[in-house]
Length: 102
Figure 1 (cartoon, rainbow, N blue to C red):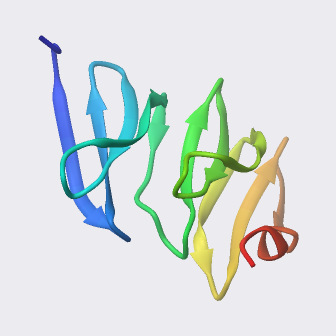
Figure 2 (figure 1 turned 90 degrees about the vertical axis):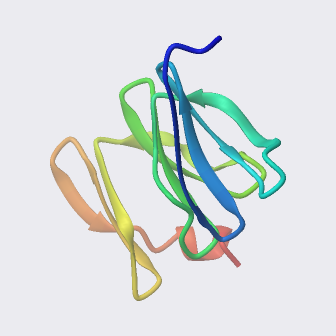
């Protein structure tokens, strides 16, 4: 039996869920759509979710694949189609994510 269980509200058909110290995503039937594997996770927005892996932020799609490899020290939600991200305190708007997101 898991020691702690914490689901979130559904966003774009998936809900974040934390069991013990790992996060994943379930669908509306309660089945895992993306297995527990992340140290942190946010809700899906514009088809992507931010996840924390090995002390870096990244974005995943709804299949759990990385849109780009984990590399950001900071990553924000999208605003007007772009996220604000930081690597080693250098902030920028990540334009190449638009290509990956279609």
